[in-house]
Length: 283
Image (cartoon, rainbow, N blue to C red):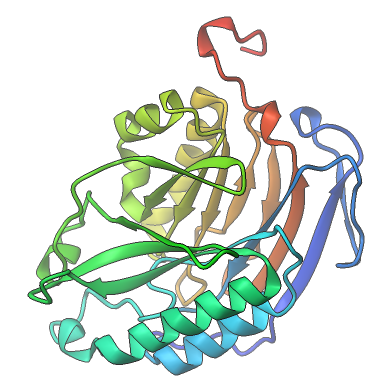
C-alpha cells in the first residue's frame, strides 16, 4: 500500500498578469480572483491510498474550499484506491463504500455549486466486473462517467475496458476526459478536439520514475490540439511526474511539486483554445 506524504495539504491560487498565451503568473492568496477570467480550475494532487474513507475525507476537505462554478480535479483511483500491481486488489474493492463515497461527493458538489472530476473503480452495470472510471459530479446532481478504454497490462488483471471516447457538456463547458495512459493515444484526443472540447481533463496515476517523460507528452497534447490540459497525478512515492494545467500555447500555468499533497487553482478563458486548427496563426 503506498505510503502517504506527511506534509499537510498546501493551497495556492495563481492569478494571471497577462493572457495565458504568454503566461506571467505569481502566487497569491487563495481569496484572490480575476474579473476577466471565465473558469476556475483546481488541481488537487493528493496521495491515493487503499482506504476509501481516508481518501473521501481529504477529497471533501478540498471541495469545502471550492467556489461556485469551480472545476476541481483529483487523481485516478482517488476514491476507491488504486493498486493494480497487487494480485488481491480487486478483492479489496468495496462496492458499498464506493457507492456511499460517490453519494457524499455528489452532495458536496451540489452544496458547493462546483464540478468534481475524480477517479474511482466502479462496478459494471451487471456487477460481474469493474471499470477504472472517471466520474464528474455536477452542481445539479448529474453524474457523468468515462470508463478507461486503453487499459495497461496491470489494469487488465482487474478491470474491463470502456467502449467509447466522447465529450460532454456541463455548465456551458464542453470537455473531454482521459485516464492515465490514454494520454498516449492521440487519435482519441483528436476526436474530442473535433467534437468541440477546448479542455481535456487527464486523470492520472503515474508514479514510476519512467513516467516523468510524460511531462513532454502532456504539453504536446495541449499544443498540437490547441486545448487546455488539466493533468492531475497521485503524489504517492516515488512520484516523479507532477500535476499540471497547460495552456493551448504550451505554457505551464500550474505545476505541483512531487511527493507533496498540493491544491492549486488558476483562472482560464476557454476561448483561448483555437477551434479551427487549420487557421491557427501561433504555430
